[in-house]
Length: 211
Figure 1 (tube, one colour):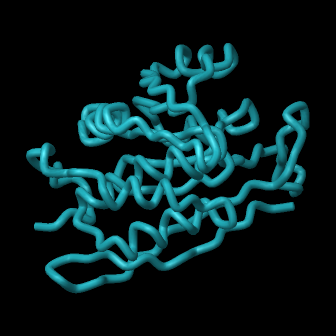
Figure 2 (figure 1 turned 180 degrees about the vertical axis):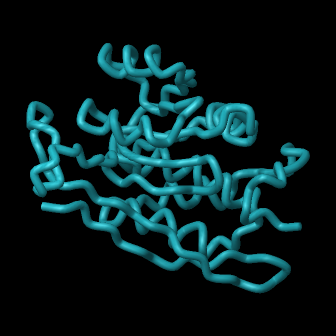
């Protein structure tokens, strides 16, 4: 089956006006890690690229997804990544480490436990440190991922959106598009209460920043 792309609309708050942008959510086909690469089917043998689960562009030079496996490596190479932010506490798998080494990609590991409600504890200091990495354009192009690209990734992206002056309705809407039925009230409360006042500025390279 070909990859499915769902285009959703998200409102962006700028100067008291909610604007609408489009966010593409790519859902790759189900496949076994041992499956052979997909081809075009026209006899050329050309390989088709498979993005990771919940892959999407966040902003210029910033992407998000679920955990990439070996079937996604060819696709990731097309992004020309400089950095990956990994938000799970477990060690990075050896095949992924080798992929980073061979492509000159720097790994920023911020381990956040994937607890379920009502035991969710999102470490604010860790999110702040990860956000500093996202804001440093020297780390771009950059991919943010956790296991499914929903909760931990969603919280980090949601805090970035607050820096971009998105209204909370739009922040929550984007979060829910990825989390779907797994959306957590605790995650949304964390994003709502997250204090952005300690961040001095937002790089102008971010397309949705308030100017």
